[in-house]
Length: 148
Image (cartoon, rainbow, N blue to C red):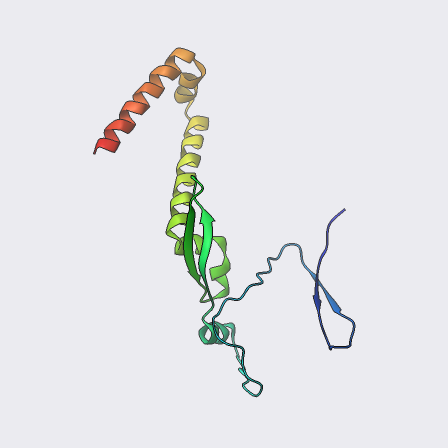
């Protein structure tokens, strides 16, 4: 049975909550993305486009904490200038840590594809003795690269 996500909003202080069904294929970000104080009654910002909203509020998220592979905290800041900036690809572009992790993942995917496509390499890993020789050769190549 499929789950439904609902969002409740208060229509009036004494009224019953209004319920809005939220589509499962959408992502809802709920957080404080600006340091601006709430507007005073009477101050009304009337944007005409999403660009106006982003230019006015200049949303950002500071000190987003992630853990590296050793479990150490890594803090990053993210700025949002358009809706597309919430996309995972755009978040990765803004983060040095996430960019490094994506590069590592892409490298592993490339190696995996080579293992699948290259029959000679695949056969080398199937035989125990040839696997040891290949691993030794790769380790010496890695040591050479790390030296330089």
